[in-house]
Length: 321
Image (cartoon, rainbow, N blue to C red; front, side, top):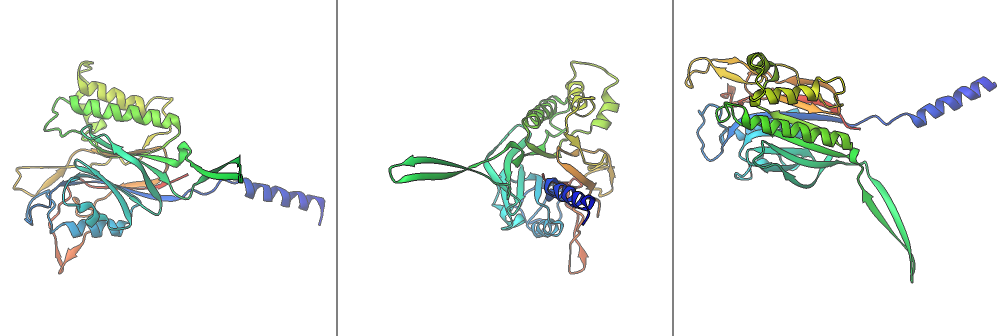
């Protein structure tokens, strides 16, 4: 074997050894399921999930098989329905009208969640199989005693922001949503700077494109919506913007009814559901089957069930470090 061949082999081995490990694929789903109440067995309520619909939601999520799920407008303090929706595969945390679920084979919750009453549910999870063990030894009478201590690096911790901004019906002036969303963006910046993995998603009840067209003409700095647009713009449009990116498509996710509550004809209006992350994202899509439910449309006895999804869900493929 010539010298050149030996050098080439050594270089090839060095490249293989130093090449970074390929990250784990992660599937993420966020969906506003629409005023989930299972205290009534009524089957014909618009945008209300009943006992009749609960197995459908469970089957839909199981078929999509996400690793992280954010649900909004779900009764987080109800009859333990999160266990019936997610089953044993997922760890779940619920608060107010939000539930966050993670695949126990990929992630594990750390500590308690927070944010109740602030328009979000913030949980932390650690990435499994990324353990770093530190062994500390000390000399005792019986000899050396060594203790292994588990330490977490910041890039092993995932900050999960499940968002449900104030309803426009209760916040026509945007004062609540301005405080909520600007506060979330500010926390995300700090976590990003500290090196944490961030996944933020949910129903923001805010469409930056639509709202900007409607209100930016005012240029009124006292208007909460103006401040909200500034927060949003600074986060994602500035030349020195962080690695945090909006990965969900700018596609409508919410319907408005054309005539009245009794009319089923609907028209797409705003993109209110957004996904923001500093993870690499291969693709995100707005689920569209039947327009109002998750994209696996289950039927019973050959008959299609009435739609119950208030918003169209957003499904993303991401990559963990």
